[in-house]
Image 1 (cartoon, rainbow, N blue to C red):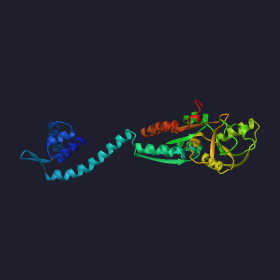
Image 2: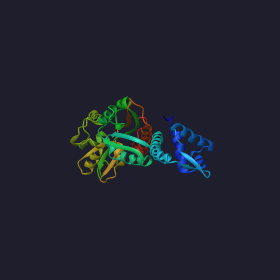
Image 3: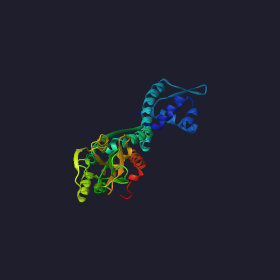
Image 4: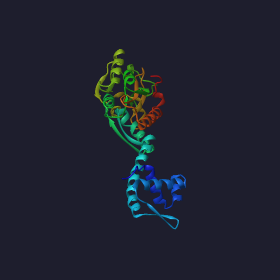
Length: 308
């Protein structure tokens, strides 16, 4: 019957087998020679047979030691991998994140941000899901995703997540439009224009409708899209004018449109949501930290709303 075989005893045995001498093994383990000698002696006592014989001042492994070494090597390689995984998890370099995001964030901003994050943390696996803000929020609350990056109203942001940044909506005009030279565009400027809009399910649509109604402005509305990028492309195609979120306006690289700040200010709040049921992993914390910095650095300063 064998005694207790500890990981440390096996590490000492492996070091002697690989280094060939007690002196060299002690250097590998960063211990003294007597410590290595005691590890081998304790292991032999626990397993009940000799592992080495001394010939001409050198340790020669027995046949049993050679067989045991193969098993020990396989086992310790697995342990080494576990320890490496532990270290990577502790430092946030390994793990799996599922991220749900609103189209305004998932189409342009997040791919670049995630590519940079993946290069910094190559052991991490990231999955991006694109849904509306409400759906993305519910995916986190139901445990289907780890992080939601969304555009929520002030009330929702305070309840479910952390508001990262706020920005003002931007009017999109075709090149050559009569309003492109103005510093801002207001509801009264858009009287008689064909207006391209987000659908009613979005909170910003309700704000915009209320604003135009308050000014007694009726709009000719023919086309709708949930996605700001699509609205911009419709404007470029000559279908009308639109109001879009500031991040999409900042990142748009196409031709044929001009962006002008809208006044009165209609605010978009960019928020990050995580589960309140479980603590965030180190990887989640690293991701959110980089997300905040990237979003602030990306959004055009003229569109930011301080304290919005």
